Amino acid sequence: MYEIEIANHQQSLAIDEVFVRQVVRRTLEIEQVASASISVAIVDNAQIHELNRQYLNHDYETDVLSFLLEEAIDSSMDKSGDQPRGAGKTIDGEIIISTEMAIERATDYAWESMDELTLYIVHGLLHLCGYDDLSGDELPVMRERECFVFEMLGRPRPSRDRSDCGHVDEERSSSGSTEMNETRGLS
Image 1 (tube, rainbow, N blue to C red):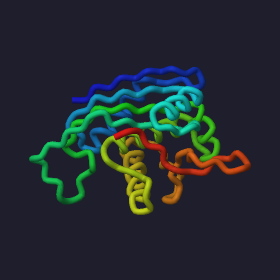
Image 2: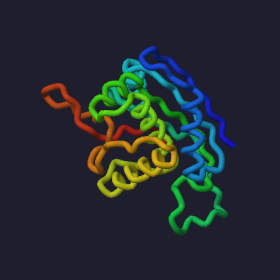
Image 3: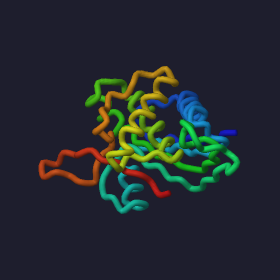
Image 4: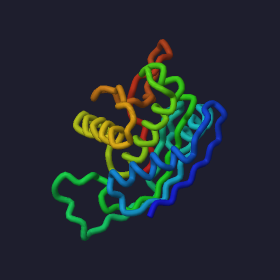
């Protein structure tokens, strides 16, 4: 049902691949995804910066990139009601996450680096399922879904509020600090 590949290309954070697979599998189950082939690449800031520049023409580091390679939707599924956006879908996608960014941001949100990394995994998967956070209308939906998934995973709730996208923005202020905005992979 779910094929999950993990490639760990960093040295900053010890990664429990069994845990990462469980997070991916459980998130897909929660979203009622019919089947999926998901690749998770765990990289450092330099690597994610290069990939962000190469594929999205964004010249900055970010936390997570998601690339939906293929999607099929079971047309016989009843999409009325409160079904998750992944319900009945077959997804082929890639998620790339930065451990260095997770370590840096975990301090800002006063939780463990692995919790931040888990948020990146969940967030990337939610994008692959069809959630977005670029608009004011969609951002609260994404935040609520992240919190729901974390609750179902038995993890501490993300401390972001509805206005905080939790992503590094392409816009840099003159002081060099980053503002928050979504960075999404190709669809």
